[in-house]
Image (cartoon, rainbow, N blue to C red; front, side, top):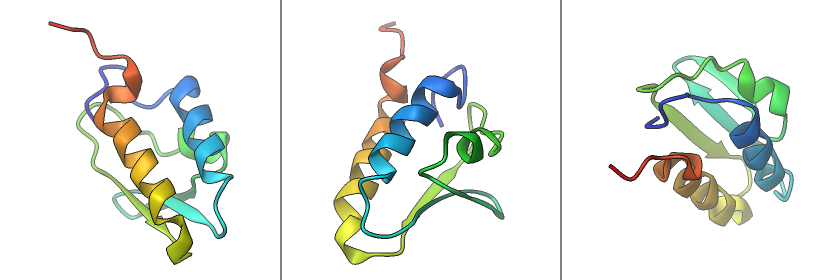
Length: 84
């Protein structure tokens, strides 16, 4: 995770919104901890700080595009990176 603030409510809500579009469950992993990506509260319990390595897994093959959207959201630092 590259966002200075780590995971917080705004990006958790966006991730949950994307995950709720899925045909099956989408999971986020921080080490051995797995949470339901469609739950804002679950996402916040990951305790993901800057430098955390988050994995994303979808149960349904049809949800690969959603996994890609979530990954892209992480890759851009939730759209909150400073242009330095």
